[in-house]
Length: 336
Image (cartoon, rainbow, N blue to C red; front, side, top):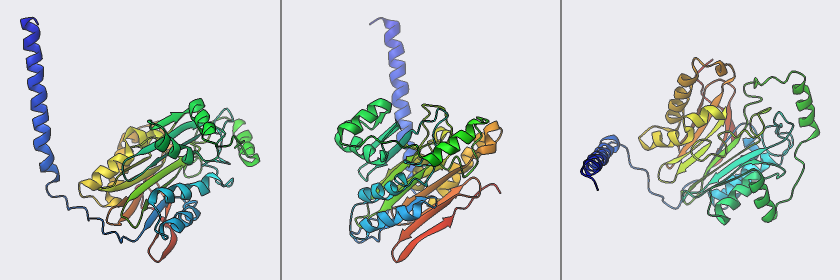
């Protein structure tokens, strides 16, 4: 090695070591006052939280599993499948509104308490993308499959190819085509997700997120919902978070992962959700897209605390735990 190259490499090595040392000394300062996460006691009351009013029947399906001592992973999959199969839910699965080419394309992800994750994106003709996502997690070395590859995998796994565009969705598409303007109506055309988090009796958390995406999107567009860290994230030592709303805004802030990290540093679930919504609002403050911007988060911590926060009024979420029936709650919001 030439002397000049040796000196350059030595300088870079010194810089790298110094950076690592700085990181190692900074971490204790940031976390030293964070209260400890409660230990699992094996007798935790189950809890399930999900987005929007279609979260009510979803919670019921999940609760049947949780109250019988079942796993959170099974509960969240069963829960969101109710929305995927309901043709009256225009933002998820069968009956979801199509893209601007008239095609229904679906995204989903799922995550368990061991940080295993699976996802599918731009999947067509399969009614239950959440179950395909779980197969990706359990049967492949990958986290995400997309498009034709995701469809072929689903068919190989025994899923049935179906037509997902209903007459109701087709009529809505034809009406949209008259002007073909992409200006999603807040809480109608861009509340595009059912997200669910569950805590089981073993004090383990799992999450699921599934959607047909923003109505009238460009063909091939993928939002936050199948992206681990954006539409969904959890850490079984801390808690979990999930998102709904304009996917592009959530992706830009790694929204759900940020909510979990804020909880790790001592924030309550609602405080953590609010901080990320505030960040998004600042990013979009001078953007022309602000007029149709809506985002909301739900969060759950290991102690069984939960909360939510959104940018504008209209977002609600469903909660069920203990003796409490599944209840719809209006989220606290920032902008009137």
